[in-house]
Amino acid sequence: MSTNEFEGKYNLKSPGVKRLMREACELKEITEEYSAHPLEDNLFEWHFTIRGPPDTEFEGGIYHGRIILPSEYPMKPPNIILLTPNGRFETNTKICLSISGHHPETWQPSWSIRTALLALIAFMPTPGSGTAGSLDYTPEERKTLARKSKQWSCSLCGKPTLKDHVETATGHNATVPERKEEVLEECPEEETPAEEYFPNETPRDSPVTLSSGLASSVCIGVLIVAIIAIILRRIFLM
Ligand SMILES: [Zn+2]
Image (cartoon, rainbow, N blue to C red; front, side, top):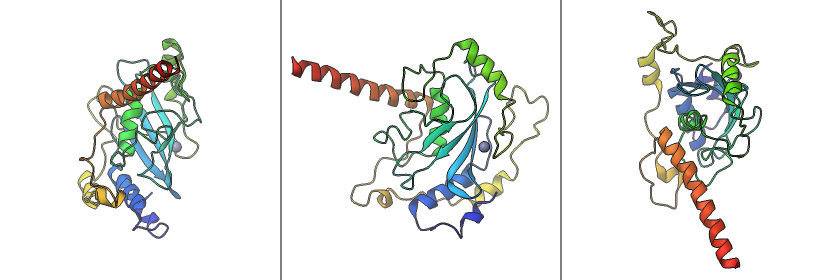
Protein backbone atom coordinates (compact mmCIF):
# COMPACT_ATOMS: atom_id res chain seq x y z
CA MET A 1 0.00 0.00 0.00
CA SER A 2 1.36 3.39 -0.92
CA THR A 3 -0.06 6.84 -0.41
CA ASN A 4 1.18 7.57 -3.95
CA GLU A 5 -1.68 5.41 -5.26
CA PHE A 6 -4.11 8.05 -4.03
CA GLU A 7 -2.48 10.85 -5.94
CA GLY A 8 -4.37 10.36 -9.18
CA LYS A 9 -7.65 9.71 -7.40
CA TYR A 10 -8.15 12.65 -5.06
CA ASN A 11 -7.86 16.40 -5.31
CA LEU A 12 -4.54 17.00 -3.59
CA LYS A 13 -5.38 20.65 -3.10
CA SER A 14 -8.30 19.77 -0.81
CA PRO A 15 -7.22 20.43 2.82
CA GLY A 16 -8.89 17.18 3.95
CA VAL A 17 -7.06 15.04 1.36
CA LYS A 18 -3.76 16.78 2.14
CA ARG A 19 -4.30 16.17 5.84
CA LEU A 20 -5.15 12.47 5.36
CA MET A 21 -2.17 11.91 3.04
CA ARG A 22 0.13 13.43 5.65
CA GLU A 23 -1.48 11.41 8.47
CA ALA A 24 -1.16 8.21 6.40
CA CYS A 25 2.52 8.98 5.92
CA GLU A 26 3.13 9.71 9.60
CA LEU A 27 1.23 6.61 10.72
CA LYS A 28 3.28 4.29 8.49
CA GLU A 29 5.45 3.84 11.53
CA ILE A 30 3.77 1.07 13.55
CA THR A 31 4.00 1.60 17.32
CA GLU A 32 3.51 -0.68 20.31
CA GLU A 33 0.19 0.92 21.19
CA TYR A 34 -1.49 1.60 17.87
CA SER A 35 -1.29 1.39 14.09
CA ALA A 36 -3.61 2.68 11.37
CA HIS A 37 -3.68 2.80 7.59
CA PRO A 38 -6.14 3.88 4.89
CA LEU A 39 -7.72 1.13 2.77
CA GLU A 40 -5.99 0.67 -0.56
CA ASP A 41 -8.91 2.05 -2.52
CA ASN A 42 -10.36 4.57 -0.06
CA LEU A 43 -8.48 7.36 1.70
CA PHE A 44 -11.61 8.07 3.78
CA GLU A 45 -11.79 4.64 5.40
CA TRP A 46 -8.99 3.42 7.60
CA HIS A 47 -8.37 0.29 9.63
CA PHE A 48 -6.62 0.51 12.97
CA THR A 49 -5.24 -1.74 15.67
CA ILE A 50 -4.80 -0.78 19.33
CA ARG A 51 -3.30 -2.60 22.29
CA GLY A 52 -5.43 -2.95 25.43
CA PRO A 53 -4.02 -0.59 28.09
CA PRO A 54 -1.74 -2.28 30.67
CA ASP A 55 -3.03 -2.93 34.21
CA THR A 56 -6.63 -3.04 32.97
CA GLU A 57 -9.12 -5.75 32.01
CA PHE A 58 -7.96 -5.23 28.42
CA GLU A 59 -4.28 -5.91 29.07
CA GLY A 60 -2.89 -8.32 26.48
CA GLY A 61 -5.78 -7.65 24.10
CA ILE A 62 -5.25 -6.55 20.49
CA TYR A 63 -8.30 -4.75 19.08
CA HIS A 64 -8.98 -3.94 15.46
CA GLY A 65 -11.49 -1.59 13.87
CA ARG A 66 -12.52 0.91 11.22
CA ILE A 67 -12.30 4.68 11.09
CA ILE A 68 -14.78 6.35 8.74
CA LEU A 69 -13.78 9.90 7.87
CA PRO A 70 -16.44 12.41 6.82
CA SER A 71 -15.78 14.27 3.57
CA GLU A 72 -15.46 17.43 5.73
CA TYR A 73 -12.56 15.98 7.76
CA PRO A 74 -10.76 17.53 9.64
CA MET A 75 -13.61 19.99 10.18
CA LYS A 76 -15.81 17.11 11.36
CA PRO A 77 -14.69 14.23 13.60
CA PRO A 78 -13.96 10.67 12.51
CA ASN A 79 -16.36 7.82 13.29
CA ILE A 80 -14.85 4.87 15.08
CA ILE A 81 -16.12 1.30 14.80
CA LEU A 82 -14.58 -1.65 16.64
CA LEU A 83 -14.52 -5.04 14.96
CA THR A 84 -12.84 -7.20 17.64
CA PRO A 85 -15.17 -8.22 20.52
CA ASN A 86 -13.84 -6.46 23.64
CA GLY A 87 -16.64 -6.08 26.23
CA ARG A 88 -16.36 -2.28 26.42
CA PHE A 89 -17.61 -1.14 23.00
CA GLU A 90 -20.16 -2.81 20.77
CA THR A 91 -18.68 -4.15 17.56
CA ASN A 92 -19.82 -2.95 14.13
CA THR A 93 -21.37 0.16 15.73
CA LYS A 94 -20.25 3.78 15.64
CA ILE A 95 -19.11 4.33 19.19
CA CYS A 96 -19.61 7.38 21.36
CA LEU A 97 -16.44 9.16 22.43
CA SER A 98 -16.25 12.87 23.10
CA ILE A 99 -13.79 13.00 20.16
CA SER A 100 -15.88 10.94 17.72
CA GLY A 101 -18.72 11.59 15.30
CA HIS A 102 -21.30 11.57 18.12
CA HIS A 103 -19.83 14.82 19.48
CA PRO A 104 -19.00 17.14 16.59
CA GLU A 105 -19.11 20.08 19.03
CA THR A 106 -16.08 18.94 21.01
CA TRP A 107 -13.92 17.99 18.02
CA GLN A 108 -11.10 20.29 16.94
CA PRO A 109 -9.59 20.24 13.43
CA SER A 110 -6.08 20.19 14.90
CA TRP A 111 -6.80 16.73 16.33
CA SER A 112 -5.99 13.73 14.18
CA ILE A 113 -6.51 10.02 13.71
CA ARG A 114 -3.64 9.48 16.13
CA THR A 115 -5.46 11.69 18.70
CA ALA A 116 -8.63 9.65 18.20
CA LEU A 117 -6.77 6.36 18.72
CA LEU A 118 -5.05 7.62 21.89
CA ALA A 119 -8.42 8.79 23.20
CA LEU A 120 -9.98 5.42 22.35
CA ILE A 121 -7.25 3.60 24.32
CA ALA A 122 -7.77 6.02 27.22
CA PHE A 123 -11.54 5.49 27.17
CA MET A 124 -11.38 1.68 27.23
CA PRO A 125 -11.03 1.35 31.03
CA THR A 126 -13.63 4.08 31.78
CA PRO A 127 -17.23 3.12 32.72
CA GLY A 128 -19.59 2.82 29.76
CA SER A 129 -22.43 4.64 31.59
CA GLY A 130 -24.97 3.71 28.94
CA THR A 131 -23.56 5.93 26.17
CA ALA A 132 -24.11 4.88 22.54
CA GLY A 133 -22.15 1.76 21.68
CA SER A 134 -21.03 1.10 25.27
CA LEU A 135 -20.98 -2.31 26.93
CA ASP A 136 -20.58 -3.05 30.64
CA TYR A 137 -19.20 -6.58 30.57
CA THR A 138 -17.68 -7.98 33.76
CA PRO A 139 -13.90 -7.85 34.26
CA GLU A 140 -13.73 -11.65 33.77
CA GLU A 141 -15.61 -11.49 30.47
CA ARG A 142 -13.35 -8.69 29.26
CA LYS A 143 -10.22 -10.61 30.22
CA THR A 144 -11.49 -13.65 28.32
CA LEU A 145 -12.18 -11.48 25.26
CA ALA A 146 -8.70 -9.91 25.59
CA ARG A 147 -7.14 -13.38 25.40
CA LYS A 148 -9.33 -14.40 22.45
CA SER A 149 -8.65 -11.12 20.61
CA LYS A 150 -5.18 -12.31 19.61
CA GLN A 151 -6.73 -15.03 17.44
CA TRP A 152 -9.08 -12.58 15.71
CA SER A 153 -8.18 -11.54 12.18
CA CYS A 154 -9.59 -8.95 9.82
CA SER A 155 -11.14 -10.14 6.55
CA LEU A 156 -9.60 -7.12 4.81
CA CYS A 157 -6.14 -6.67 6.37
CA GLY A 158 -5.54 -10.11 7.88
CA LYS A 159 -3.80 -10.30 11.21
CA PRO A 160 -3.76 -6.94 13.03
CA THR A 161 -0.21 -5.64 13.41
CA LEU A 162 1.45 -3.78 16.25
CA LYS A 163 5.10 -3.44 17.08
CA ASP A 164 6.10 -6.14 19.57
CA HIS A 165 5.48 -5.13 23.13
CA VAL A 166 8.70 -4.51 25.11
CA GLU A 167 7.77 -7.11 27.73
CA THR A 168 7.18 -9.85 25.19
CA ALA A 169 10.07 -9.00 22.85
CA THR A 170 12.70 -11.23 24.41
CA GLY A 171 16.13 -10.25 23.20
CA HIS A 172 15.11 -9.42 19.64
CA ASN A 173 12.47 -7.33 18.00
CA ALA A 174 11.32 -8.76 14.72
CA THR A 175 9.00 -5.95 13.77
CA VAL A 176 11.15 -2.85 14.18
CA PRO A 177 9.64 -0.34 11.75
CA GLU A 178 11.66 -0.28 8.56
CA ARG A 179 13.14 2.80 7.01
CA LYS A 180 12.01 5.10 9.81
CA GLU A 181 14.22 8.00 8.65
CA GLU A 182 13.13 7.58 5.04
CA VAL A 183 9.44 7.49 5.96
CA LEU A 184 9.75 10.62 8.05
CA GLU A 185 11.62 12.37 5.26
CA GLU A 186 8.82 11.61 2.80
CA CYS A 187 6.09 13.11 4.98
CA PRO A 188 5.16 16.67 4.12
CA GLU A 189 6.18 18.73 7.11
CA GLU A 190 3.90 21.67 6.80
CA GLU A 191 0.78 21.72 8.91
CA THR A 192 -2.22 23.12 7.05
CA PRO A 193 -2.51 26.64 8.46
CA ALA A 194 -5.51 27.19 10.70
CA GLU A 195 -6.74 29.96 8.36
CA GLU A 196 -7.33 27.34 5.72
CA TYR A 197 -9.92 25.63 7.96
CA PHE A 198 -11.29 28.83 9.46
CA PRO A 199 -11.05 31.43 6.73
CA ASN A 200 -13.18 33.90 8.71
CA GLU A 201 -11.72 33.33 12.12
CA THR A 202 -8.47 34.11 13.83
CA PRO A 203 -6.18 31.08 14.04
CA ARG A 204 -6.84 28.84 16.98
CA ASP A 205 -4.33 27.85 19.63
CA SER A 206 -1.49 25.53 18.78
CA PRO A 207 -2.49 21.94 17.96
CA VAL A 208 -3.74 20.08 20.98
CA THR A 209 -2.15 16.77 21.78
CA LEU A 210 -4.88 14.81 23.44
CA SER A 211 -3.30 12.85 26.27
CA SER A 212 -5.30 10.26 28.14
CA GLY A 213 -5.88 12.75 30.95
CA LEU A 214 -7.24 15.34 28.55
CA ALA A 215 -9.43 12.72 26.88
CA SER A 216 -11.12 11.98 30.20
CA SER A 217 -11.42 15.65 31.11
CA VAL A 218 -13.08 16.44 27.78
CA CYS A 219 -15.62 13.69 28.48
CA ILE A 220 -16.14 14.88 32.05
CA GLY A 221 -16.52 18.46 30.71
CA VAL A 222 -19.34 17.33 28.43
CA LEU A 223 -21.02 15.58 31.37
CA ILE A 224 -20.73 18.63 33.66
CA VAL A 225 -22.26 20.90 31.01
CA ALA A 226 -25.15 18.44 30.59
CA ILE A 227 -25.75 18.23 34.36
CA ILE A 228 -25.72 22.06 34.74
CA ALA A 229 -28.20 22.32 31.86
CA ILE A 230 -30.55 19.83 33.58
CA ILE A 231 -30.32 21.65 36.94
CA LEU A 232 -30.97 25.07 35.33
CA ARG A 233 -33.96 23.69 33.46
CA ARG A 234 -35.42 22.30 36.72
CA ILE A 235 -34.93 25.65 38.52
CA PHE A 236 -36.62 27.59 35.75
CA LEU A 237 -39.52 25.16 35.46
CA MET A 238 -40.30 25.33 39.22
ZN1 LIG B 1 -8.63 -4.59 8.91
